[in-house]
Image (spheres, rainbow, N blue to C red):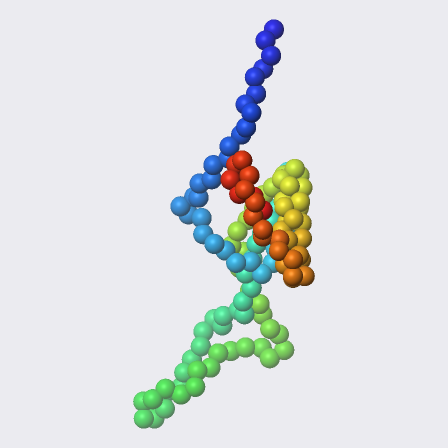
Length: 127
């Protein structure tokens, strides 16, 4: 019986989906779905736009002040969910480690250290 020969390296090449676009997120909403995956919904918050607005027309035909209906006691904020990501347990653990590394680097930068000193490695540059 022959032994399985494994490659000495694995190269990951990156491609961007033409539909991919940069999204800004103010927060995340989600949880564990019925299939045991973690569902992450990224959202952007903004004040809710009124259903309509009106302007008075003055007797001389000029526009007056614009008015929109609103409730003085309740501020309505819309959370627009722009991205939904499903990840499994192992990916969630890897994401957690990755985020901790990036946060540690930002903490170092806040403290005046140089976390972004790049060094050359056999596969290119690494942080």
